[in-house]
Length: 484
Ligand code: GLN
Image (tube, rainbow, N blue to C red; front, side):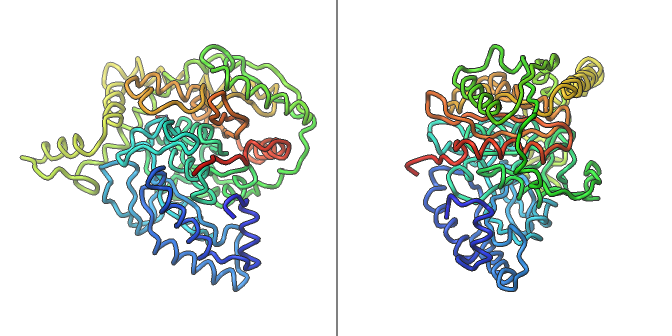
C-alpha cells in the first residue's frame, strides 16, 4: 500500500478495498513511529485528518469521488490551512493558527484529499538544507546524518520515507527540485503564475511558485491537475484554460530535442552527479531523443542576481511581522519601537535576519541603482538566454544539484557555499520557467541523484511526458530508503 501510485490508491479507495480512514490511519501510525527521528512534520492533527477522511469516505460511497478523494497529502507548512497551526518554520509564527485556507489547500479540500499534516521547512523557505528551521532540521531518510535539502525538505523526506502519498512544496530558487533530488523523489516547479500564491506565506513574490512533490511523474501530473488554475485573489495568477497535465504522458519521445547547457557540466559539478546525469542522457538517446549542446552564458550570474533580488523582496514581505498584527511579540519592551525591534530580533532566526539586512541594503538610496536595478537587468538577460536556447531544443536537461546530500553542519558556517547548492535551479525561477527533478541514480555514497528537466513556458505536460517515459524505462524513482 505504501508504495502504491496515486492512481492505484484512488482505484483501491473507489473500489472500497480500503477506506480513506484506514489509509489515513496507516500513515498517521507510520508518522507516529518515524517522525520523532526524521522530523519531517512540524504539525499533525489526527482528529482533523480523520474528519476529512470520513468526509471523503462519504463521497466515495456516494460515487462522487475526484481522482484524489480520500488520499492523504502532506502540506508544506508555508500554506495557510484554516484551523491548522501554520508556522513557516519560524518562531515568529510558532503559535499562529491560520484563519483561512490558501488557494492550494482549498483546491485539495475541494478534491476531497486529506490533509495529513504540515511539513517542516527552512525558516520562511530560506535555505537549502532545512537547518534554518526553528523546529529543528529534517533528516534525510537515506542517511540520517545527511541533510534532506531545502527548503521543502520536510515534504521531500515525507514522500521518500512513505510518510504521505504525495506532498506540496514551494520553489523560489530551487526549494522543490533540490530537496527532491537529495531525497530521491520527483518534484515540479510550474511556470510562474500557474499555481496561485494566495495564502502561501510570501518569501520573494516575483519568484515564489508552489508545486507538487511525489514518487513519480504520473503522480505529479495528478497533483498539478488539482493545484493549477486561475485565482483572482493572486494578481500574478494566469488566466488560462484548464489543462490535463497527464494528457501527454504516454507519447513516445522520438524526435525530442534535448538541450544540454555546457555551463551546467563545467567546474563545481561532482563526478557522482555528472556520471548519473550522463547515464540518464544516454537512456534518453535510446528512447529516441537527440542531444543538442546549448549555452546559457548568463546563468553563471544567477546566484549573485538571486541573492540581490530575493532578499530585497523578502525584506519587504517580512516587514509585516512586527509583533502587532500576528506572530511573536516580545514579552517585555519599553515603547513601540522597542517592541518592533525586540519582537523581530527574538522572532526571526539568523538566516532570515541576514536576508532582511541584505535586502534593505540593496534597496537603500545610493545602492539601489548599483545592486537592485543592475540585478533586474541581468535577470532579463538570463531569461533571454533560455528564449534563445529553446529555438534549438524542446527541453533542457542537466543536474539539479552539484552534489548528493551533504552532511549536517558541513555548509552551516559558510552561507555562500550553501547558496551555491542552487546554482543549477535558480536561473529557472529568475526566468519564470517550469523545472522539475526526477531521480536518476545514486552516488558512490549511495545517496540519490536528481536529473533536472527544464521546459519552456507552460510546457509542464511535455516535461511530465519526458519524465514519465524515462520512469517507464528505469526504476530509480521506485527505490525506497531501507531500514526505516
Ligand atoms: N535555497 C534558496 C534560498 O535559500 C532557495 C529557497 C527556495 O526556493 N525557497 O533562497
